[in-house]
Length: 374
Ligand SMILES: Cc1ncc(COP(=O)(O)O)c(C=O)c1O
Image (cartoon, rainbow, N blue to C red; front, side):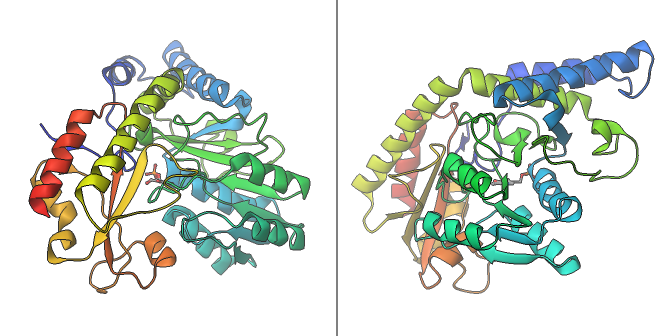
Protein backbone atom coordinates (compact mmCIF):
# COMPACT_ATOMS: atom_id res chain seq x y z
CA UNK A 1 0.00 0.00 0.00
CA UNK A 2 1.45 3.33 -1.00
CA UNK A 3 1.41 6.32 1.34
CA UNK A 4 0.30 9.61 -0.15
CA UNK A 5 1.67 12.85 1.32
CA UNK A 6 1.24 15.03 -1.78
CA UNK A 7 -2.27 16.37 -1.27
CA UNK A 8 -1.30 19.96 -2.16
CA UNK A 9 -0.57 18.62 -5.66
CA UNK A 10 -3.77 16.62 -6.01
CA UNK A 11 -6.16 14.71 -3.77
CA UNK A 12 -7.93 11.36 -4.12
CA UNK A 13 -11.69 11.38 -4.74
CA UNK A 14 -14.01 9.78 -2.22
CA UNK A 15 -16.50 7.06 -3.21
CA UNK A 16 -19.34 9.55 -2.72
CA UNK A 17 -17.79 11.98 -5.21
CA UNK A 18 -16.96 9.20 -7.68
CA UNK A 19 -20.49 7.91 -7.48
CA UNK A 20 -21.97 11.35 -8.31
CA UNK A 21 -19.54 11.68 -11.21
CA UNK A 22 -20.33 8.22 -12.52
CA UNK A 23 -24.06 8.79 -12.23
CA UNK A 24 -23.88 11.98 -14.32
CA UNK A 25 -21.42 10.57 -16.85
CA UNK A 26 -24.01 7.93 -17.52
CA UNK A 27 -27.28 9.79 -17.19
CA UNK A 28 -26.65 13.49 -17.82
CA UNK A 29 -25.37 13.26 -21.40
CA UNK A 30 -27.69 15.88 -22.88
CA UNK A 31 -26.21 19.16 -24.00
CA UNK A 32 -27.12 21.70 -21.31
CA UNK A 33 -27.77 24.27 -24.05
CA UNK A 34 -30.40 22.05 -25.74
CA UNK A 35 -33.98 22.92 -24.98
CA UNK A 36 -35.31 19.36 -24.83
CA UNK A 37 -35.78 17.38 -21.62
CA UNK A 38 -32.30 15.77 -21.73
CA UNK A 39 -30.69 19.18 -22.17
CA UNK A 40 -32.78 20.69 -19.41
CA UNK A 41 -31.84 17.83 -17.10
CA UNK A 42 -28.13 18.48 -17.68
CA UNK A 43 -28.66 22.23 -17.21
CA UNK A 44 -30.33 21.55 -13.84
CA UNK A 45 -27.27 19.57 -12.68
CA UNK A 46 -24.98 22.50 -13.49
CA UNK A 47 -27.21 25.09 -11.87
CA UNK A 48 -27.58 22.97 -8.76
CA UNK A 49 -23.77 22.70 -8.55
CA UNK A 50 -23.45 26.48 -8.96
CA UNK A 51 -25.91 26.97 -6.11
CA UNK A 52 -23.87 24.64 -3.88
CA UNK A 53 -20.58 26.45 -4.52
CA UNK A 54 -22.19 29.88 -4.12
CA UNK A 55 -23.89 28.78 -0.89
CA UNK A 56 -20.68 27.75 0.88
CA UNK A 57 -18.91 30.97 -0.18
CA UNK A 58 -21.95 33.10 0.69
CA UNK A 59 -21.87 34.44 -2.88
CA UNK A 60 -24.71 34.98 -5.32
CA UNK A 61 -25.35 32.21 -7.81
CA UNK A 62 -24.58 34.62 -10.67
CA UNK A 63 -21.09 35.23 -9.28
CA UNK A 64 -19.84 31.65 -9.79
CA UNK A 65 -18.47 30.45 -13.15
CA UNK A 66 -17.14 26.98 -13.90
CA UNK A 67 -13.75 26.64 -15.56
CA UNK A 68 -11.20 23.92 -16.29
CA UNK A 69 -9.39 24.50 -12.96
CA UNK A 70 -7.25 26.83 -10.91
CA UNK A 71 -4.89 27.89 -13.69
CA UNK A 72 -7.70 28.92 -16.00
CA UNK A 73 -9.55 30.76 -13.23
CA UNK A 74 -6.44 32.74 -12.27
CA UNK A 75 -5.63 33.50 -15.92
CA UNK A 76 -9.21 34.67 -16.40
CA UNK A 77 -9.21 36.99 -13.38
CA UNK A 78 -5.94 38.68 -14.30
CA UNK A 79 -6.36 38.89 -18.06
CA UNK A 80 -10.01 39.99 -18.00
CA UNK A 81 -9.36 42.59 -15.27
CA UNK A 82 -6.68 44.17 -17.47
CA UNK A 83 -8.72 43.87 -20.66
CA UNK A 84 -12.11 44.95 -19.33
CA UNK A 85 -11.71 46.79 -16.05
CA UNK A 86 -9.04 49.31 -16.92
CA UNK A 87 -6.37 47.78 -14.68
CA UNK A 88 -3.02 49.46 -15.32
CA UNK A 89 -1.16 48.42 -12.17
CA UNK A 90 -0.96 44.98 -10.61
CA UNK A 91 0.47 44.68 -7.11
CA UNK A 92 1.51 41.09 -6.47
CA UNK A 93 4.34 39.04 -4.94
CA UNK A 94 7.20 36.92 -6.27
CA UNK A 95 5.82 33.89 -4.40
CA UNK A 96 2.62 33.43 -6.41
CA UNK A 97 1.87 30.22 -8.30
CA UNK A 98 3.25 30.21 -11.85
CA UNK A 99 -0.26 30.54 -13.33
CA UNK A 100 -0.49 33.95 -11.65
CA UNK A 101 3.12 35.04 -12.19
CA UNK A 102 3.07 34.05 -15.85
CA UNK A 103 -0.39 35.53 -16.50
CA UNK A 104 0.81 38.84 -15.09
CA UNK A 105 4.04 38.66 -17.09
CA UNK A 106 2.05 37.88 -20.21
CA UNK A 107 -0.50 40.70 -19.88
CA UNK A 108 2.29 43.14 -19.18
CA UNK A 109 3.85 42.20 -22.56
CA UNK A 110 0.69 43.08 -24.47
CA UNK A 111 -0.77 45.94 -22.47
CA UNK A 112 0.61 48.85 -20.58
CA UNK A 113 0.49 47.24 -17.18
CA UNK A 114 2.86 48.20 -14.46
CA UNK A 115 3.72 45.28 -12.16
CA UNK A 116 4.88 45.94 -8.61
CA UNK A 117 5.86 43.32 -6.05
CA UNK A 118 5.17 43.79 -2.40
CA UNK A 119 7.95 42.84 0.02
CA UNK A 120 7.85 39.41 1.67
CA UNK A 121 9.93 38.16 4.58
CA UNK A 122 11.88 34.88 4.91
CA UNK A 123 8.74 33.09 6.07
CA UNK A 124 6.89 34.18 2.93
CA UNK A 125 4.73 36.65 4.86
CA UNK A 126 3.46 39.75 3.08
CA UNK A 127 4.87 42.99 4.45
CA UNK A 128 1.47 44.50 5.08
CA UNK A 129 2.82 48.03 5.76
CA UNK A 130 4.60 47.97 2.41
CA UNK A 131 1.48 46.63 0.70
CA UNK A 132 -0.58 49.44 2.26
CA UNK A 133 1.96 51.99 1.00
CA UNK A 134 1.84 50.54 -2.53
CA UNK A 135 -1.96 50.53 -2.51
CA UNK A 136 -2.10 54.15 -1.37
CA UNK A 137 0.43 55.24 -4.02
CA UNK A 138 -1.43 53.33 -6.77
CA UNK A 139 -5.08 53.73 -5.93
CA UNK A 140 -6.46 54.23 -9.42
CA UNK A 141 -6.78 51.45 -12.00
CA UNK A 142 -5.03 48.97 -9.72
CA UNK A 143 -5.52 45.39 -8.68
CA UNK A 144 -3.82 43.43 -5.92
CA UNK A 145 -3.20 39.77 -6.73
CA UNK A 146 -2.04 37.77 -3.72
CA UNK A 147 -2.54 34.11 -2.92
CA UNK A 148 -4.29 33.00 0.24
CA UNK A 149 -1.95 30.10 1.09
CA UNK A 150 1.34 29.43 -0.58
CA UNK A 151 1.23 25.97 -2.15
CA UNK A 152 4.92 25.24 -1.48
CA UNK A 153 5.50 26.47 2.05
CA UNK A 154 1.94 26.87 3.39
CA UNK A 155 2.25 30.47 4.62
CA UNK A 156 -1.21 31.95 4.98
CA UNK A 157 -2.04 35.55 4.13
CA UNK A 158 -4.65 37.51 6.08
CA UNK A 159 -7.32 37.60 3.39
CA UNK A 160 -9.68 39.84 5.34
CA UNK A 161 -7.01 42.42 6.18
CA UNK A 162 -5.84 42.63 2.55
CA UNK A 163 -9.40 42.69 1.21
CA UNK A 164 -10.41 45.51 3.59
CA UNK A 165 -7.30 47.49 2.67
CA UNK A 166 -8.08 47.14 -1.04
CA UNK A 167 -11.71 48.08 -0.52
CA UNK A 168 -10.80 51.14 1.52
CA UNK A 169 -8.67 52.46 -1.35
CA UNK A 170 -10.91 51.37 -4.23
CA UNK A 171 -8.45 48.78 -5.51
CA UNK A 172 -9.58 45.39 -6.90
CA UNK A 173 -8.44 42.26 -5.09
CA UNK A 174 -7.80 38.91 -6.76
CA UNK A 175 -6.78 36.01 -4.56
CA UNK A 176 -5.58 32.62 -5.72
CA UNK A 177 -7.44 30.58 -3.10
CA UNK A 178 -6.84 27.26 -4.83
CA UNK A 179 -5.14 25.73 -1.77
CA UNK A 180 -7.63 27.05 0.75
CA UNK A 181 -11.21 26.79 -0.53
CA UNK A 182 -12.76 23.74 1.10
CA UNK A 183 -10.08 23.78 3.82
CA UNK A 184 -10.79 27.15 5.41
CA UNK A 185 -14.18 28.79 5.27
CA UNK A 186 -14.32 31.94 3.19
CA UNK A 187 -17.32 34.24 3.29
CA UNK A 188 -17.28 36.75 0.44
CA UNK A 189 -20.04 38.79 2.08
CA UNK A 190 -17.64 39.51 4.95
CA UNK A 191 -14.39 39.54 2.99
CA UNK A 192 -14.60 41.94 0.05
CA UNK A 193 -12.79 40.04 -2.70
CA UNK A 194 -13.20 40.85 -6.39
CA UNK A 195 -12.04 37.45 -7.72
CA UNK A 196 -11.29 34.16 -6.00
CA UNK A 197 -10.49 30.80 -7.52
CA UNK A 198 -10.92 27.10 -6.80
CA UNK A 199 -9.85 23.80 -8.29
CA UNK A 200 -11.69 20.48 -7.82
CA UNK A 201 -8.66 18.23 -7.50
CA UNK A 202 -7.33 20.13 -4.48
CA UNK A 203 -10.36 19.24 -2.33
CA UNK A 204 -11.04 15.62 -3.34
CA UNK A 205 -12.92 16.47 -6.53
CA UNK A 206 -11.90 15.66 -10.11
CA UNK A 207 -8.99 17.13 -12.10
CA UNK A 208 -9.68 19.57 -14.91
CA UNK A 209 -12.63 21.37 -13.36
CA UNK A 210 -12.70 24.45 -11.16
CA UNK A 211 -14.49 27.68 -10.58
CA UNK A 212 -14.04 31.40 -10.28
CA UNK A 213 -16.01 33.75 -8.08
CA UNK A 214 -16.37 37.17 -9.68
CA UNK A 215 -17.93 39.83 -7.51
CA UNK A 216 -20.94 41.21 -9.37
CA UNK A 217 -19.50 44.75 -9.31
CA UNK A 218 -16.95 43.62 -11.87
CA UNK A 219 -18.47 43.21 -15.32
CA UNK A 220 -16.05 41.43 -17.61
CA UNK A 221 -16.43 39.94 -21.08
CA UNK A 222 -15.95 36.32 -22.19
CA UNK A 223 -12.63 34.64 -21.47
CA UNK A 224 -13.22 31.95 -24.09
CA UNK A 225 -15.16 33.08 -27.14
CA UNK A 226 -17.85 31.00 -28.78
CA UNK A 227 -21.23 29.92 -27.43
CA UNK A 228 -23.06 31.64 -24.61
CA UNK A 229 -22.25 29.05 -21.93
CA UNK A 230 -21.52 30.23 -18.38
CA UNK A 231 -23.65 33.28 -19.03
CA UNK A 232 -21.51 34.23 -21.99
CA UNK A 233 -18.26 34.21 -20.00
CA UNK A 234 -16.74 30.92 -21.04
CA UNK A 235 -17.77 29.21 -24.26
CA UNK A 236 -17.77 25.44 -24.62
CA UNK A 237 -20.13 22.61 -23.71
CA UNK A 238 -19.90 22.15 -19.98
CA UNK A 239 -18.18 19.28 -18.16
CA UNK A 240 -21.40 18.15 -16.47
CA UNK A 241 -20.05 15.12 -14.60
CA UNK A 242 -16.96 17.05 -13.52
CA UNK A 243 -18.99 20.03 -12.32
CA UNK A 244 -21.40 17.83 -10.36
CA UNK A 245 -18.51 15.96 -8.72
CA UNK A 246 -16.72 19.24 -7.97
CA UNK A 247 -19.83 20.49 -6.18
CA UNK A 248 -20.23 17.24 -4.22
CA UNK A 249 -16.57 17.38 -3.16
CA UNK A 250 -16.94 21.03 -2.14
CA UNK A 251 -20.05 20.23 -0.14
CA UNK A 252 -18.29 17.39 1.72
CA UNK A 253 -15.18 19.53 2.27
CA UNK A 254 -17.29 22.23 3.89
CA UNK A 255 -19.61 19.97 5.86
CA UNK A 256 -16.64 17.97 7.22
CA UNK A 257 -14.24 20.93 7.40
CA UNK A 258 -13.74 20.99 11.18
CA UNK A 259 -13.20 17.26 11.82
CA UNK A 260 -10.92 16.99 8.77
CA UNK A 261 -8.96 20.04 9.94
CA UNK A 262 -8.58 18.74 13.49
CA UNK A 263 -7.42 15.33 12.25
CA UNK A 264 -4.83 16.87 9.90
CA UNK A 265 -3.58 19.36 12.50
CA UNK A 266 -2.78 16.49 14.88
CA UNK A 267 -0.88 14.66 12.11
CA UNK A 268 1.09 17.76 11.11
CA UNK A 269 2.09 18.47 14.73
CA UNK A 270 3.11 14.81 15.17
CA UNK A 271 5.27 14.90 12.03
CA UNK A 272 6.99 18.09 13.25
CA UNK A 273 7.67 16.48 16.63
CA UNK A 274 9.00 13.28 15.06
CA UNK A 275 11.22 15.11 12.57
CA UNK A 276 12.68 17.28 15.33
CA UNK A 277 13.29 14.23 17.52
CA UNK A 278 14.97 12.15 14.82
CA UNK A 279 16.88 14.48 12.50
CA UNK A 280 19.48 17.13 13.18
CA UNK A 281 19.81 20.37 11.25
CA UNK A 282 16.37 20.38 9.69
CA UNK A 283 14.56 23.61 8.92
CA UNK A 284 10.84 24.11 8.56
CA UNK A 285 9.89 26.60 5.88
CA UNK A 286 7.18 29.23 5.76
CA UNK A 287 5.30 30.56 8.75
CA UNK A 288 5.08 27.00 10.07
CA UNK A 289 4.30 27.94 13.68
CA UNK A 290 2.38 31.15 13.00
CA UNK A 291 -0.11 31.67 10.21
CA UNK A 292 -0.01 28.52 8.09
CA UNK A 293 -2.29 26.25 6.10
CA UNK A 294 -2.63 23.06 8.17
CA UNK A 295 -2.40 20.74 5.16
CA UNK A 296 1.20 21.70 4.27
CA UNK A 297 4.58 21.15 5.94
CA UNK A 298 7.75 22.11 4.08
CA UNK A 299 11.03 20.81 5.49
CA UNK A 300 14.60 21.43 4.36
CA UNK A 301 17.47 19.05 4.99
CA UNK A 302 21.19 19.79 4.56
CA UNK A 303 22.25 19.06 0.98
CA UNK A 304 24.01 15.69 0.78
CA UNK A 305 24.09 12.94 -1.82
CA UNK A 306 21.27 11.25 0.14
CA UNK A 307 19.00 14.26 0.52
CA UNK A 308 19.58 15.13 -3.14
CA UNK A 309 17.57 12.04 -4.07
CA UNK A 310 15.14 12.13 -1.16
CA UNK A 311 11.87 12.51 -3.11
CA UNK A 312 13.01 9.74 -5.44
CA UNK A 313 14.12 7.46 -2.58
CA UNK A 314 10.84 7.99 -0.72
CA UNK A 315 8.96 7.21 -3.92
CA UNK A 316 10.84 3.91 -4.23
CA UNK A 317 9.99 3.25 -0.57
CA UNK A 318 6.29 3.69 -1.43
CA UNK A 319 5.78 7.27 -0.23
CA UNK A 320 4.65 10.15 -2.46
CA UNK A 321 5.64 13.70 -1.58
CA UNK A 322 7.06 16.71 -3.46
CA UNK A 323 10.44 18.35 -3.80
CA UNK A 324 10.95 22.05 -4.25
CA UNK A 325 14.35 23.45 -3.46
CA UNK A 326 16.14 26.57 -4.54
CA UNK A 327 18.11 25.73 -7.63
CA UNK A 328 21.78 25.74 -6.76
CA UNK A 329 23.23 23.26 -9.21
CA UNK A 330 21.58 24.85 -12.22
CA UNK A 331 20.73 21.35 -13.45
CA UNK A 332 17.25 20.88 -12.03
CA UNK A 333 14.74 23.68 -12.28
CA UNK A 334 14.53 25.01 -8.75
CA UNK A 335 11.53 26.32 -6.88
CA UNK A 336 10.97 30.02 -7.49
CA UNK A 337 9.56 30.26 -3.96
CA UNK A 338 12.61 28.80 -2.21
CA UNK A 339 14.87 30.60 -4.70
CA UNK A 340 13.30 33.94 -3.72
CA UNK A 341 13.35 33.30 0.01
CA UNK A 342 16.76 31.62 0.25
CA UNK A 343 18.74 32.44 -2.90
CA UNK A 344 22.07 31.37 -1.42
CA UNK A 345 21.01 28.40 0.57
CA UNK A 346 22.05 24.93 -0.50
CA UNK A 347 19.48 22.70 1.18
CA UNK A 348 17.02 20.07 -0.02
CA UNK A 349 13.37 20.86 0.49
CA UNK A 350 10.56 18.35 0.78
CA UNK A 351 6.89 19.24 0.98
CA UNK A 352 4.61 16.89 2.88
CA UNK A 353 0.95 17.70 2.36
CA UNK A 354 -1.88 15.93 4.10
CA UNK A 355 -5.52 15.00 3.81
CA UNK A 356 -8.01 13.48 6.22
CA UNK A 357 -7.20 10.07 4.71
CA UNK A 358 -3.68 10.13 6.22
CA UNK A 359 -2.98 8.41 9.53
CA UNK A 360 -0.49 8.61 12.41
CA UNK A 361 0.71 5.15 11.45
CA UNK A 362 1.66 6.47 8.00
CA UNK A 363 3.76 9.15 9.66
CA UNK A 364 5.54 6.48 11.73
CA UNK A 365 6.30 4.60 8.50
CA UNK A 366 7.53 7.82 6.86
CA UNK A 367 9.87 8.55 9.79
CA UNK A 368 11.17 4.96 9.66
CA UNK A 369 11.85 5.22 5.92
CA UNK A 370 13.51 8.62 6.32
CA UNK A 371 15.80 7.17 9.00
CA UNK A 372 16.72 4.27 6.70
CA UNK A 373 17.40 6.56 3.72
CA UNK A 374 19.32 9.25 5.58
C1 LIG B 1 -1.88 27.91 -5.39
C2 LIG B 1 -2.24 27.25 -6.68
N1 LIG B 1 -2.79 27.97 -7.66
C3 LIG B 1 -3.16 27.43 -8.83
C4 LIG B 1 -2.95 26.09 -9.09
C5 LIG B 1 -3.36 25.52 -10.41
O1 LIG B 1 -4.52 24.74 -10.29
P1 LIG B 1 -4.92 23.71 -11.45
O2 LIG B 1 -4.01 22.55 -11.31
O3 LIG B 1 -6.34 23.34 -11.14
O4 LIG B 1 -4.79 24.40 -12.74
C6 LIG B 1 -2.36 25.29 -8.10
C7 LIG B 1 -2.07 23.87 -8.35
O5 LIG B 1 -1.00 23.39 -8.06
C8 LIG B 1 -2.00 25.88 -6.85
O6 LIG B 1 -1.45 25.16 -5.88
